[in-house]
Image 1 (cartoon, rainbow over the protein chains, first blue to last red):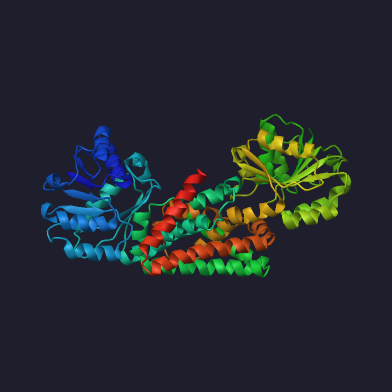
Image 2 (spheres, each protein chain N blue to C red; image 1 turned 135 degrees about the vertical axis):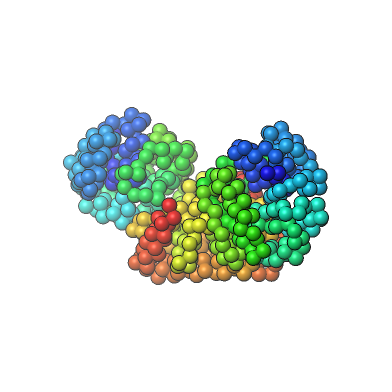
Length: 278
Length: 278
């Protein structure tokens, strides 16, 4: 299979590494950064690189888009005429609903877009932080649309398992966005709000343990990507934040009223829910 | 030095292990659970164990209290007559202000209480989860009071460094409680509220990545201990929660207004703050 990866950042670079490690050798890379292409070639994870990709697309069976949501739309618009008839395009985008609608408006009929979301990532960006390990045992989500052929969905599923993902689930774009608003976007909003709520001038570093460190790790955040993700899933995220604030306010009320029993009930509930995740 | 550890749970047990590993052999353990005492003796981390401790106190140079805040007060009340003149008592309690006031009311004049807080812990409780490693490179806080002798404070400081702590800071009980409300109690409240805000019946486990896992780890929480800690630091914690909610509401407002620039500013601020912590 001839594969082109568009964007060799931390996710695209990790795809290239993971594909290479399980034997895919006909992998080509597209990136606007010449240095990134040079590194990818030196690492031996791409056969060749290009800043535009046009020369690769006519032979590509699969194109993996690992760039920001808006850039995927621009890129498809500019390059769709070069895509091979019958080929598959997939993505790694963390939002689906609005994004899929926009892609479907511009996508040619003879190329199939299978929308995917590898639920793995790192705080850092760029190929220097790419690693095949990041996909190991992670979750992969596919949000099929009516025009997707079963055999093409299975190609993506098989590939996901091959490069290390543990679970591949098929769900609707709507459920995807609702769940991601809660499990991924809300935690990022919380982490940002936590560290931003620190008061200036305090020597906070002297007073932190693992809990603060863990809860703020994702406050180190790619502002361009995550502002797109937040705004592209606005309603689900606002709902998740509101539900969270309701629970936090219940805790606040119990503290205010010295309601030890009430607090203990919240803690027992959270402990039981957390234990089920492991 | 003759040391008695009161409470051989995850923290007291870790103290026994860490002290043993750096050569302290005259360490005695007090625990109401016979099985815990048996395990500690079998591990060779205590010389002898007792359910009351009375027989150990007359020779103890240092007593380390590793039990819940309210139990420390009860325990001192019931056992202070047995404490050796000139000996030191220290604690591992995560709140200081109200707690110190109560201890000072009952503490005899010829025994010195040095209030300490090893900023390390685990979600699990009990000696089975104790490990000397938990203290490695962690922060230790001492909150001196006017009657503390410099030489006694230094004994605790030295011991903390010996068993692996990286930084030992002396601060006022007031600053301690303010900072802990922010760096430790607020994250715990957030983690509990996050997982409790999940809607029943969703298959959330299929949609989580590292962020949700990291942010909910401490939602697995000892309800008895943490309800005491929350209520014992009420005003600081409420203030920290309110500051956090203000920041979260700013993010919410930006999402609501499709203010991409505003979101990016919050993310840049959080990224810069988080990078300084590493």
